[in-house]
Length: 392
Image 1 (cartoon, rainbow, N blue to C red):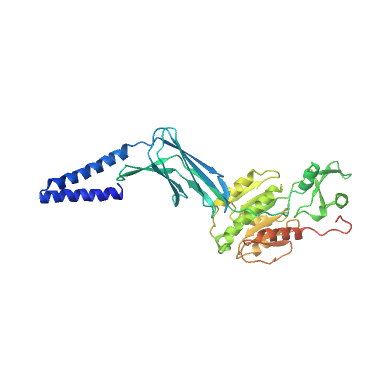
Image 2 (cartoon, rainbow, N blue to C red):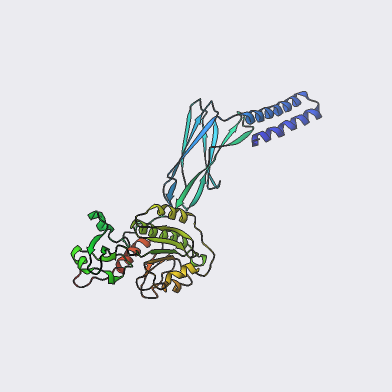
């Protein structure tokens, strides 16, 4: 019963008591009439069917923080339906949108729409919708679940990083419709594949003659050689972040990861606990969806020493670029010592600004609002100086 129904019940009981004490039949009749009205309302509400079908459309179902997502609801009446109240819950019932629909005839349609709040990342459940129906006097009400629940993922922001650090030769490939420039060599029967220089490549493999001819730094690579792997390491330990640095670090991981994948670089994204957020190969973009979905729900982990799988990244002979995204770690030296010949380290600090502690370490300011400019500037600075006589 509604508040009006409970009030009517109290009044009916009072009238019955007064009629009995005063011996007045009129008061007793009014009390019995009130009780009959309550019983009739409960029966009407309990037996009333809702011949309604609900269709929910979420566009898009994956959205960045601060983006625009819309939910469209459509009620289709399979028979005559009374006026109802529709409540569509969001974020496990913490928020809800409510609408009052008019009475619908057979085949009638009622439409409503609302915006999804996207101020924080996460995986949220929308629905199922709850339809409220009450009797004409508002004495009783009943709630019925209608439709199914849908899921919407609010991903972290992805900033536009312009400087490329991988997939050497891809810009020339788009221009010349070829991925590599084959060059015969007299030293052996194999061909060398010349590709554009990428940050982390060994300068001893630069092919200066072809660089001068093509106007860009070109690196020689055996067709059967193994491509250096880029590792993107996310320091998600709780003790490494203060205030907004954790969310800034997640946005940095998303932005750098997407940039690496779209540039065609073979890369692996892991956390300091050894959890893999995805592994991508050149030309494969399917990992981008998994990476952003994982980052939408990742949470800080308890403080712990760097696991052996992370410490192995600084093993002798490791090749390729290592990008570390952190906040204000208590042990930054543990990261900077991972640099080595042919294995530079780019340290993205999303908390306090850090200074490079050893050669081969590039520090990027990943604090909110500074990532894109600092990244582009650091990558351009990390490119090798032009050799005398090399192309400008």
